[in-house]
Image (cartoon, rainbow, N blue to C red; front, side, top):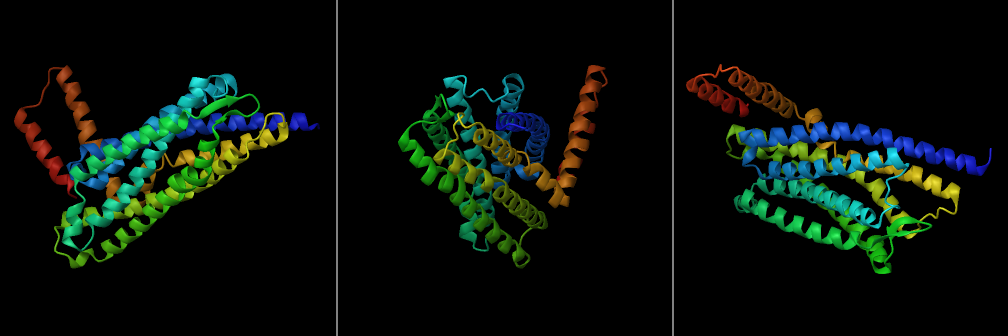
Length: 339
């Protein structure tokens, strides 16, 4: 068997792998992030919680990333690749959107860990520092930074005949190799999220000594455990792809070397699929490791969404419930949120 046929087989396998994993991650991602948004916006318990606010923003960014991911998957089905080598505008736009979603994801994971550390701290003045209003301001500032940064870096991507869509400017190449991927995408968010999530977990172990309402105490324990497991998943899923990106930018593979190019495409497809799990996994981590979150999901789906859908159907059939029954049912559901 010639090396040409082997490289063609590897490329075909890499393409099929990207297509199948793309559709699978999109399905799980849309369901998981939609349920996350539903739970964290519908339950009154989470509406005033800063950490829940960051998780909501992260879920929105993940949802947008899933739309980009399925677009790339559909293009791969049509053209056999993601079409970034066919259009200069799409070459830039694809990386701008991907970096915006990824950086927002990383920022919100870090903010969640930091917020949980401060909100569970035994020092009162530290607990008072992290408010929901401050969280909104910080999120707005960082999202503006993410948009500007992503546009600036994404604009440096251009199509090269032998390498495809890559960074063409030497300054941006050096920036990506020595700061963007190793520090901004790697070391900084990983260390920040890991350190503060472990410190928050340490705070929660001493929470019984503080005079707090039982509802607040349960919520702090729940959120801290969820954030800690989310950070562990984040570190495991992001590091391999970051290492690959540093290598691939420093040593791009030319299409004139078919075997090396095919192996590079396969490695990229595998590591990209692992990295994409980071954008779908938060809901599933929460529901696996938090029994309280499972009850809250059941509450939202069964006693809120189902009841609202039934009420809507009854309204269509001119069988609207009396107002006093609706108020009684709503007050019952609010009391159940604290369980």
